[in-house]
Length: 260
Image (cartoon, rainbow, N blue to C red; front, side, top):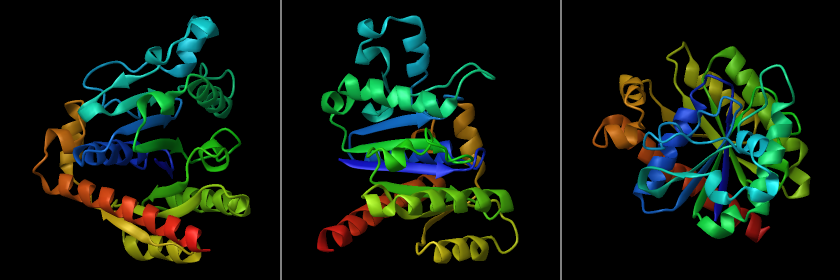
């Protein structure tokens, strides 16, 4: 089972990238589970085939814990992708990071991975603040590999650098490692060079450049991923290439760890 976390600054296109990656992997015949780790709970909205995905925290709030079933927390969407949303507390009340921990604990208690047996698990994680809860996929033994989604914009790179620091903090404990950087283009001046500098400083690399494309907005207006809405488009091909690169980077890193 490949366990992969995608981190990035809010608004950088991380959820769009993750859901299209999930769709591309599902098209390859892989069983995919995507777990949204953002209080907005919108990670899987373009994968769920129009179904509302309940958040784990909301279900736990309104249902006695011993009566919650795994089926109450999941929706099966495009090509069998299992959609999960951790959710978050009421705005202004509680800690969103703590909410992620609660959601993960409940999924583990209910044996989510054993039941669905996914080939790939994707964690879609907000990376603006890498506190204890939001760092769970890195340090809790959930994800094996982290890919960072960033543009060349200053604040996006700043957030990406903080994520790299968090990964580096736990690198000697056998936790998740950095698999690579995904450049989600905003067409700013010297964008590739700026992100490549970050990659080199992080002893990593840009594994894929994702161009700006109006097909993304058109697909989302339909409540779909680009891969589903426009399967023959150039942008869909970019997402399929990203799926190949992510799997290659994951396998390469694990081969290096095995030989170490």
